[in-house]
Length: 285
Image (cartoon, rainbow, N blue to C red; front, side):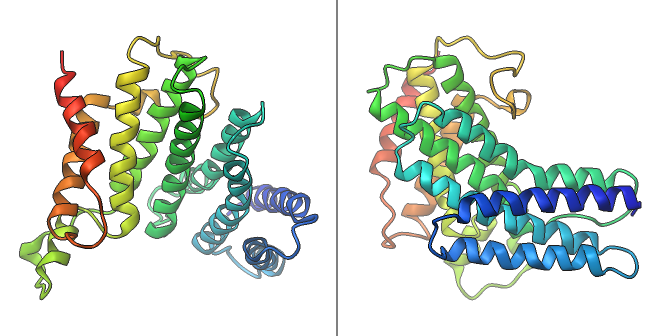
C-alpha cells in the first residue's frame, strides 16, 4: 500500500484516539472504552512498527472493532437520555457516519487491488450494519412513542426508517443461507434456521425490527414526500430501499415462522408480529 494511504489511515486512528479521549473523561474506567483503548493501541503499533507490507485485513478489522466499541458507548448515552436533546438526530447521524467509515476504508483499499481478497470478517460486517439499523430503530421507536406518533417532520422520520430497514436487510444478507442438501445435521431445528439465513438471536430480532419499521412507515408516513436529494441526512440509502409493504410482510412472516417453528418454546412472542402483519396485509391498495 502507498505510504500516503498509510499516513491517511494513521490520521484516522489518531482522530479515533481523540474521540476516545473525549469520551473517557469522567467515564471511570468504562469496560467498553478500556477495550477500545487496547484495540487502538494495537492499531498504533501495527502502523508504527511495520517492516513490510501492511496487513490491511488485520488493520481494517481492528479499526472496525474500535469504532464499534467507541460508538457503543456514545449510543448508550443517547438511549439512556431517550434522545431527548435537541441535537439527538444530528448525533445519530454522526454515529452512523462513524459506523460507515470502515466500509469506506475497505472500498478505498480494494480499488487499487481489485483481485485482492480484502474484506471485513463477516461477524464484524454484520455488526456494523446491525448497529446502524438498530440505532435508527431505537431513535424512531423512542421519538415516535414520545410524540404519540404525531410526527413533526415525517419526511426525515420516513428517511430514518428507510435507512434503518436497508441496514438491517444488508445485515441479514451478509451470509448466505446454508443449503441443507450440502450439509448433514443432527439437529433439524438448527438446520431449519440456517437454511433461512438465521445464524443468531440478533438475526431473529432484526426480522422483527424490519417488520416494525415497515409498519411505522406505512401507518404514520404514508403521505410523507420522500427526500430526493439526501441533503437532510448524510448517509442516505434511498436508492437501495425496497418496498416497505413487501419487506415488512416477508420479514414478519419469516419471524413468525421461525419463532413458532424451530424456536418454539424459547421465549419468542409472535402476537405483536401477527398484529403488524395483519395490518400490512389489510393496507394493500
